[in-house]
Image 1 (spheres, rainbow, N blue to C red):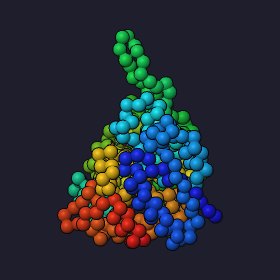
Image 2: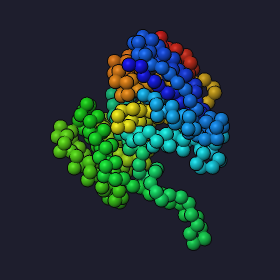
Image 3: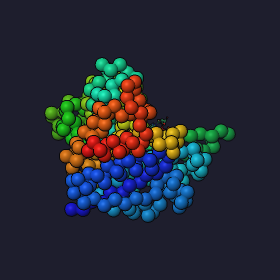
Image 4: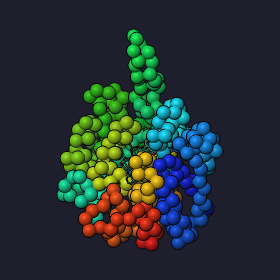
Amino acid sequence: MSKNILVLPGDGIGPEIVAEAVKVLEKVNADFQLDISIDEALVGGAAYDAAGDPLPEKTLDKARQADAILFGSIGGPKWDAIERDKRPERGLLRLRSSLGLFANLRPAILFPQLASASTLKPEVVSGLDILIVRELTGGIYFGQPRGIREENGERVGFNTDVYSESEIRRIARVAFELAMARDKRLLSVDKANVLEVTELWKEVVDSMSAEYPDVEVSHMYVDNAAMQLVRAPKQFDVIVTGNLFGDILSDEAAMLTGSIGMLPSASLDENRKGLYEPCHGSAPDIAGQGIANPLATILSLAMLMRYSLERGDVADVIEAAVERVLEQGLRTADIMADGCTPVGTQAMGDAVVAAL
Ligand code: NAD
């Protein structure tokens, strides 16, 4: 059955890294006769420049029709001063919420070849394999009321952190099921000692554990979780948390692995249709220089194969090719180490294609 993948390169390094992932996609499409058609559309600042909207209707329509979306990155200083609703980030938030992509999966895996790239001691991080499951369409990033208003002669900024039981239950279910397929340990992160919204979160997660008797459930306050992630990260298997805490903890986990340029992510709806993107942003500081690491985007493509196209076999082949390239000593600048061979974005993409 033919599948349609929508490619949204976005801004900054987005087009450079997505181009390399598309090379990999074209190669596996031919090798495995996947019958995938590839379409492309504008998003973020590029879409604002072309159409005055970071998520044009045409892009949203294509996204709705696609079986999966491969996304680069959006944003940059060029669009920081435009009206808030038109900023690139709003385009991505709208895309996630319009498609109901409520489950954000962020694996933090340390490839053994990169153990020295981490700022932590190799023994603390080598063999690291954790999965952060972040709720993506609720919580404080979407809660109403929100805004900046005048009060007693000064401006006051406010946001609302809100989760319903059903929202908590559906993200917890994803996390429980992923834990079942892994080491069967699930940590729920909250701030239940201060925030009622996370008190409810904790209660709902606990109430579901009877349905998954094989999964060992534990809870941790977010401040402690942030500390434990750098103290002893290997204690964790699957971590589930809300939008705000998940945003911060997943970036922290990203750094455990040495480079944010290595980390893929998936955002799934209830039917496992998904948007796949690297964890990093548009890196305006290195955009256009041909030095960005495309591996996070290529590994995002592997996740796309595994979760949305149910082709774990193809995902395994892509991941093995990435590992082989690292084994060959090829490194982009962000993961460069003594004795390795420095390569740019395109050469790294070509090497992965050759290793497939
Ligand atoms: P960033 O992730 O873009 O960059 C942080 C640092 O990591 C920079 O030094 C950058 O050069 C480096 N880096 C990131 N990706 C890399 C890669 N593939 N290879 C090598 N080095 C890499 O974060 P930022 O600087 O905070 O944000 C820049 C812009 O990206 C902002 O406009 C922000 O809003 C946007 N952003 C977008 C997304 C997204 O598209 N999902 C996510 C985060 C930030």
